[in-house]
Amino acid sequence: MTRVLAIDPGSVRVGLAISDPLGITANPLEVVPIEDAVDRVAEIVEESDVDEIIMGLPVGLHGEVGDSVIGARRLADEVTAQTGIEVVLRDERFTTRVAERSMLGAGLRRRSRRERVDKVAAAVLLRDYLDSR
Image (cartoon, rainbow, N blue to C red):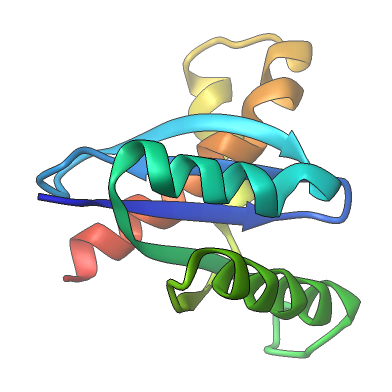
């Protein structure tokens, strides 16, 4: 079996999450600086037998396309070129909000939430993707 890797792109940091080999669970993995994201994703693909990559596409509330969407598409192209795996783009409008609420409900302090929100948002995106299959 192989894994699915999820990427939650941001302008400064990128959150990563990975599935278990059976594609049942979505696990927050790490947060990396945007400038290291492509290389780190390539390492994870090699180390963890990833054969599918999904990435959140940060469209606006009403579907508008801004700079963040353009940056996400550029990142997706770079990841595809580096790994040879076509990146599937998915709407991620509310993943960060859902992640923040779940961490707030778990009682995490503001600093802990800020450090983890990107990888938890990637796990929310991945969970949604796995559920839709």
